[in-house]
Image (spheres, rainbow, N blue to C red):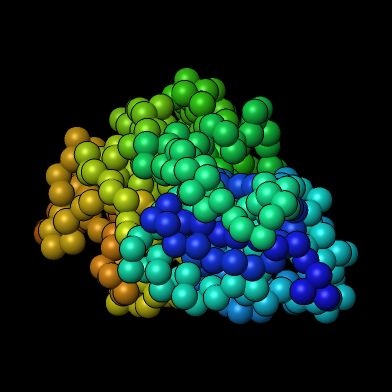
Length: 401
């Protein structure tokens, strides 16, 4: 059955190519080649807006075993530019499945390739770094047995790189909406959608937070227009979501965050929101060689020494010192979490200046580079939403002191 698929070719921008069979839609696609080390959760990965303009290579050899259902999407569509697997499941085996993974890819026009040595491709990307790639199948390969490799390579190299890409507005909601609190409402939070996943506002709502989701183009005035439950002006807290693209291009959200910090609004950010907190505090960001992607990345909380297994998807990181606090216009900033594989910054904390008896000042903002809302697991970091509630509560107590 797999041998009946049309032939397909994957071409990397450095000239290396792999031959296989089409998987999903037949045609042509280009993007940044990245690999994901998760053995499950492929539906959440494919529908995560953070993967916009990326071609995802699955390191797990068997993909599609549990099919596709109507409950686990993290957004309204598949966002990846292309999909690469070694051995796709011939048929799904799950009582929740409504169709196969390949059916979902085909329905949404996602061009993929199967039957290639994904281990060799992953090792190549680890050694050479993430790079542009193209997947070609069907008529674009031509009628003859020979493939015009030079033409395909030219198409790949003409694709825009991820560095300098401003993509958050392309995946964000066009209009704001509200996710009501579950049970008793305790706080109101403005959440800027830079590529937000469905589970994120759900996790906050389950903790009594009414979430007002705003577009990526939101301004400080838009945020302050959200009525809070405890603050006289503006929401009780601000949240920045995950999202795609180069954080160096996100001038609008960075300006918004700086204004919110000046106004004393408590802040929590994840993934892209961690990078933007870093920029707002004066740190730089840089492109990782091949990034962190998957649901098995080890991160250490430096304040407790606890190691968390976490879900990741990022190709950029914050350039902040690990060995000392940094004084900023908004307080003292420290690196709170690090990746145990490579010491990449995985979290930031901002505390008010002027702590007493050598103790740090009160927490004002924090962020992490990974995904505590990971619907497919792991759930080691779900406590961070509780920490956000504690931050909102402490800010409330100060407001009424």
